Length: 248
Image (tube, rainbow, N blue to C red; front, side, top):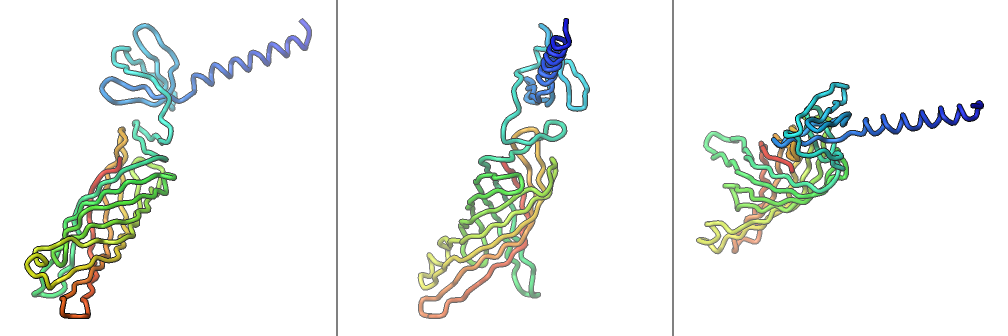
C-alpha cells in the first residue's frame, strides 16, 4: 500500500467518523407521553429503551413505553434549561388584565380606579422586538368606558427563561355610550389619543406560553362637551397600571 492510498484511507476515515459523530450531536427533542420533553441527542436505541444524551454529556435511559416521539427542535424557538422555551420569530398573542390606579389628590375627592382587559396580536421579528396591534376594554368611572386601538412595540431584555421586558402602546381610545349620555342627551363624549409605556417580567414555561407581570403608566385623553357650551372640557386621565397576563 503506497503513501497515497494510506492518505486516501485516512481522509475517508476522518470524514466518516466526523459524519457519525455529527449525527449523534444533532440536537433533537424527545417528547414523553406525559406531555414533557427533553432536549439533547439520541445516542442509542434498542427494542426496549432510548439512550438520550443531554448537552452536558449526561446520558439517560428512557423506556420505550414512556416515549411518544423524537423530532427536530421547532424552528423559531429558543430553548433554556429544563426545557423552557420561547418563540423568537413568528406570530404571537398576548392578553393582559388588571387595574389603572388613580392617586387621591384631595381629601374630599373620589378615587377613580379602572379595570382593564387588553388583547394584542402581532409578529415577533426578534426576541427583542415585536410589533403588534391591540384593543380591549378600559372602564373609567370618571368618563366613558374606552375601547382602545393601538400599535404595540415590545421585546425581551435578556436571553433567559425569566427576563425583564418592555412594552409601548400608542393609539386612540374610542368612547362608548354611558348611562349619563342615555339619560342626558345634552352631554357628548369624544375619545382621544393614548400612550402607555410599561415594564414587566416574563416567565417562560415548557409550553408555548409565557406568564407576565407588568406595570406602567397610561395617558388617555377624552373630551366632554355640553351641547350648549362651545368649549368642550378636555381631560387627560393618568393612571398607574398593574396587570398580569400571558403570551402565547
